[in-house]
Image (cartoon, rainbow, N blue to C red; front, side, top):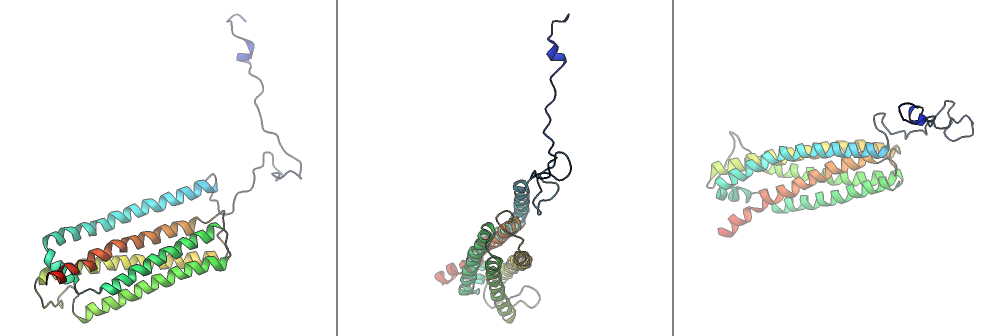
Length: 255
């Protein structure tokens, strides 16, 4: 050619096209050319595959938990500021909390994290629905036990007029600091208890889905992300217990 280019550069070969399967015996045949293999029934239309869907769900839960960390972080910062300003008063007020009840609740939540992990494992390994529901139910029972202890503790504070407000009564020193301490106590433990109640509601839904055979080794994302939420609530208590319950030992030791 006059421009020195090969004809093949101007006239490329035939474009490759995938074969059209029209044989009804072909596994992917659905009566239409270029039929695709059927999708997993739990795959949403905006995801390419189950792996991508699971990653997006997990990422979404982690983003939510980051906002929760920021939320509780503000309360922990307020505690740190007031604890620094009223160290002795906080220690005296903390001495009126029941360390055995707090320790019992700590053990309960640690055990609930174990049962939650076993529930996730049961779903991942396609365990029978009864096994999956049993581990989820065990987690719910432990969560309910935690809330029951909090009801006992709150009732004791109301009985002894240790609830901040017009009826707050304090016989020792540092009354103002004690009222600030119990304001933070009810705010932090109350919000934590609210998260626990929400978690129990989530677990009830997950248990119902497990009973209907929704989860197996190919689809267990709801159990997994619910477990992340539950573990987060447990970890928050691991911080609350020493900050609220154990600082009273310093006051006892110095008096």
